[in-house]
Length: 299
Length: 299
Image (cartoon, rainbow over all chains, first blue to last red; front, top):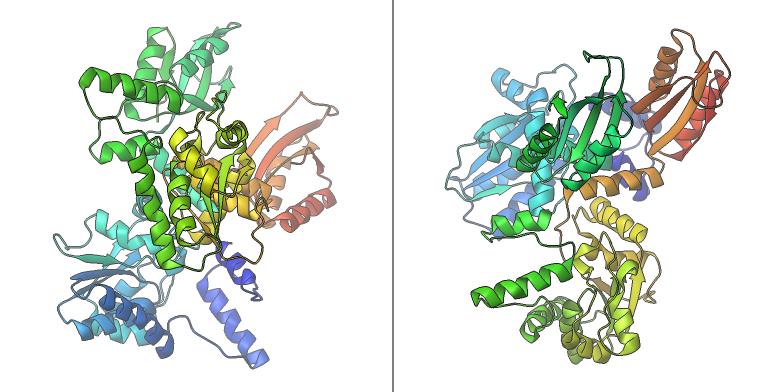
């Protein structure tokens, strides 16, 4: 939706067709045949690749001593242009491509030495979710790119969060893939001067919201557990009050009576709390256990 | 938490004291007396104000023709330094300060011509949540600042979201306040070349997540409504399937039987859906109504 909205705001007519890039590509070709328009392929086009090469010129201008550059790879146009320029200007520079593990079409193409059509797959790096790479960029990549590595969905999500928290930058999944490769040691660039291409920021805000939530859970800043308590008036109030005193914010509370393996006269409450981290969670657990609340089902 | 974490990552010892800036300030003074350390006040300090004035030098260097600058105002140091520099270099430039409506201590100080202590108040612009402004900056502000305006919490939240979506920048509440003032016509700068000071990005990720959620609700990208349906096996499955076919994502579903004003044999389901906007929601409502589902409680 972020990309569609952005296109519309620039005055473009947009039409949603099919479920992935390939469906949209076919629809665009049909539209061009019908209307006699000009078709611009996003990566199977020498001029587009040349245009993307200007990023290489800028990088070289800003930092001629860079030793490695990590680039997101979908159809291959972006890395082909950048690699062509940078290797020509400095043959010793390392150019590394990154793909989503779920759809590593460039790795497959390099193995067979030609574009291979992969089965449909979903990834949060939708900007590089391409099933068949371009033949034009593939030839350049064979010649100028040193290595293609892959990153998984969790690694991409964590990199999006890192860019938000540390760089204060909104990056889409594809754009965060190079950082994901770097921080997860997928690339051998220790002690080297490395450049990362953060290729775009068109990410749906609700996806960011979910990535943040997942990140907070991983960092133990959100926690979920259940508490078994006596089914008597006032007990729930006492539990909520105690949690408040312990400095945690209750985001969700659900009371389930009768289900689960509780004794008669007991009831179970599921809580989702906002905390400051693992120590805070332990402190809460200790305090509640000390007051005869039974804790179960931690996550 | 974002600021505390950032300080710790720079190697600082941090201690959490009290509930607001004033409590922390008093604790810091006590600590300095005890240890003989050097106290650096964040805004009641000529050297700090002078340092912040270098932002004015950078602005002038980058754009000497700027006609107005909008600056977040807490204690007043930042705007005092910037205003002093810019007005000296270009007396015609307009300098406008922005405060959170909830805590407009600079407006109060200007009215009484001296720092006034306001009652405690909460705002998402915690970076400018200062109850008593500085006497040093106040004198400079009287002389060099044209106007102080205020923005409310909703306006600040929406500006944080705008900066994320359009500028791809993570800004804290205080830093988004100038944009909030601009887009909500709080400042008379039509057709002028305006600069906004985005003063920091230390915002808690969970706050961002909530701001996004609120923004999505405002933009009708999240919707909540209830559906009354016959209490028979298979009806809920039919409802969920139909919603899926209509392209909406179910984020939450809750089934309440017996409560509410339903006839016997009817049951009520509360839904939270992710949609593409108001038209999509209308399409879903029409389709469901057309299939004998009764819709109520829209939000």
